Amino acid sequence: MLGWDGKKNAAAWPDVSDAAAVPHYPGGLNLQHSVAYWLTLDILSSTLPGGEQNRDRPCTAVRVTNASLADVFFVPFFASLSYNRHSRLRRGERASRNRVLQAQLVKFLVRREEWRRWGGKDHLIVPHHPNSMMQARKPLSAAMFVLSDFGRYSPDVANLRKDVIAPYKHVVRSIGDDESPGFDQRPILAYFQGAIHRKDGGKVRAKLYQLLKGEKDVHFTYGNVRQNNGIRRATAGMSSSKFCLNIAGDTPSSNRLFDAIVSHCVPVVVSDDIELPFEDVLDYSEFCVFVRAADAARKGFLLRLLRGMPRDEWTRMWTRLKEVAHHFEYQYPSRPGDAVHLIWAAVARKMHSVNLQLHKRSTFIQSTSSE
Image (cartoon, rainbow, N blue to C red):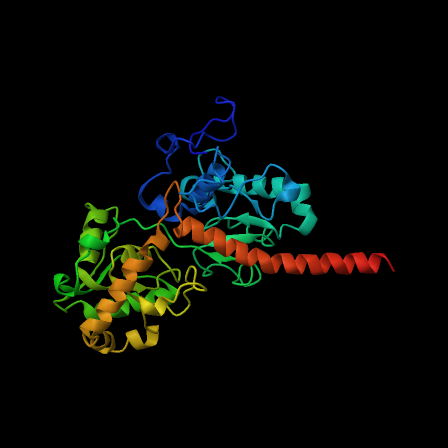
């Protein structure tokens, strides 16, 4: 794992008892899809001395060594990192390392007794990057996936019935409640910085740019976190803005929404097909503004909406943002109510319905075989 040599260290996994000594995930934009890393660390820590009783650990998921005791089989394959680091074809290669790793994963899993028992329905895989696991997603589609959205999946491969939507890891710095600027300390009405010209559903970005580019209290420019202290400038820009625009791009979702949440900048979601993390336990209308793409593209509509929001209503949403921001934090050790905790809880809810289906199927098979 991330440079960990299991043979050299005579252990398949690193000792996670010392958080400072845990292998680091690559930084920059790699981090936004690092969900598998945080889940892996959390489940490894559950077997530490006192892990199950550790008051600081939510203990939603506990690793077991006896497969017959497992409710879910977590597959620690870092699909997003494989895509980010190994997709390019190197000289002399007939297939990229990413493709090879996916093929090896499929071959390994489908031969396992644990997979064959229920056809993989009780397995959990984390292809959070929208382009990750392109070749393996179909043959492994019976498993539960942890995804950023369904934008690049067909409904027969990924859907809300069996899969979990997880937040991106934000890349801007989180703002503490005490240092969060209020209404009057945020001079920018609306903030957006990113790629402007996108394909398909992302065409609304270019339209909004044309509508908003001349407004003095709107920051709408091209840029990314790699450029000129981009993360620092995005942190400052979002914390100085009342509203942060989350506009559909090549995919329905982006880490921009979660950057806005931890900046306590009220998100304005312009993405008709977006699926949101933990939507069954969080009411996003309490801290987000949702606008249909067709409405946002109408001249003057978005500006009238945002400028017309009363201070009290904005402050109510800002207050709610400060209350929910911790739900979107990835950290090790994990904490009650953080992103890792809520993902495991969402997995448990999904597995409840999966287990009902599997048990009904088992009962039917047993009853027919006894006739």
